[in-house]
Image (cartoon, rainbow, N blue to C red; front, side, top):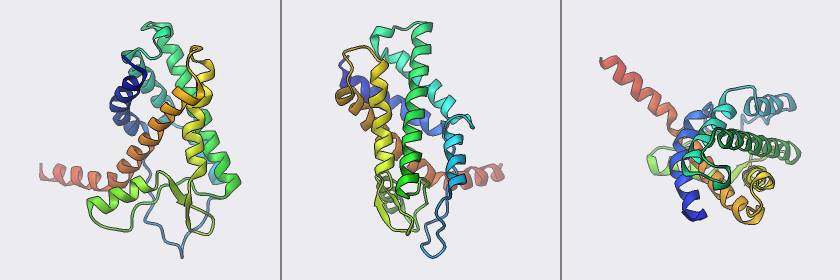
Length: 210
């Protein structure tokens, strides 16, 4: 199986699992008149919750290790207990680097790391908003801007992780490929965040019917 096919298969298998592993606190639609930027303490709490203070990163590492174990990536690590541990540790380290880069750069640049729901109706407009906010965010003035911190984290984590992968894996090839995957996963997470209130209401409604 070629590296590209491995990445595509990994995306298909891993995206739903990662979405379920995340914490989907959804903020109300963005209101420029009431917007309050994150302060230093709030940013630290968000970073801590992403990197050890909640189950998200542990579940993500477990899911990642399970999927890459199935597709045997990288093949040099084998489908053994040791290979599973190496894959889990690699995912954990990559996620810590990604989250720290995202939160740290966002603090330095004054951008927001939260996801705000769309102030719109309809599946297509809301989906478009969720995907748009994969690459955009809000600055301290409440204006949309390119989300450089999130993009840097999405690519930086996998690129650094190639340093402990087998030698023929490089930051500018496999690291960038996995970075593309991370951007896709962020879009998946935003979609779940956007529509999770509707799903909760749907299941509560169905439950009342019974």
